[in-house]
Image (cartoon, rainbow, N blue to C red; front, top):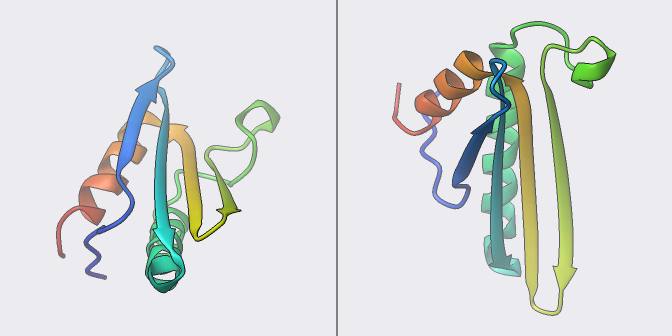
Length: 101
């Protein structure tokens, strides 16, 4: 899979205990929305393919999780994608998405 992210730019933070959170947000007009959603799906597919364990809330025993939201405001749609999981996993995942295989 060769995916270069054009719309989603992730900001990372860690909890100091080896768990990270990566959040990306893209605000686009209708014409670009399908491309943004393709990027979201590519990230989620890659995350699932290289999952460090079961997906679910970390406080309920999940190894990683993802949250996606879409908000429409007039002519603009904002898509937010948040990943949580082990720091090394998330950093490796996003590094692979930033360059072609």
